[in-house]
Length: 185
Image 1 (cartoon, rainbow, N blue to C red):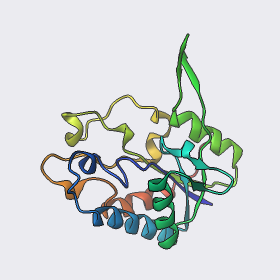
Image 2: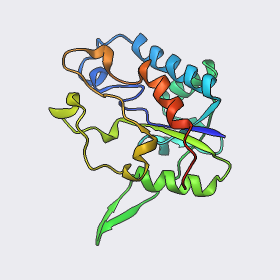
Image 3: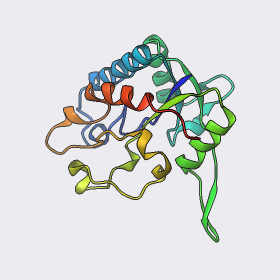
């Protein structure tokens, strides 16, 4: 089975949309269409890793939160099969400092629960450095270091060109290359 571990913010929705509400709504549609092509071309199913995943009912893969349900409905309309979300894993990074969202641990837990996943790709912008270096492609020490070779990290914001943010056509081929790798975990 081929899996896309998908984040929402910065991939489907972008910081440009939050900072500029006049960004065309068809930009979201375009990113969903790109995801649909990826899923069709590489026979992928989607597992949600978004920070908003706890608003998705795992048993039914539905949400009471309107914008999330609208997004899940749009995925379904485009033939994107969302099969699950990663479990919520809390980790203590130092004594007394617990983190609610640590995607590396959550993906690792999911992969351990699902040995049938042969190939996977992670699409998540969380690896990008905050402003102002984000547009330069600088990376921070992230919670996805263990999975860096399986990671595509779209640009979440551009002050000059909002058409280059989020999931892009160029990512289609990148996903294909990553999906050729055998899983190590």
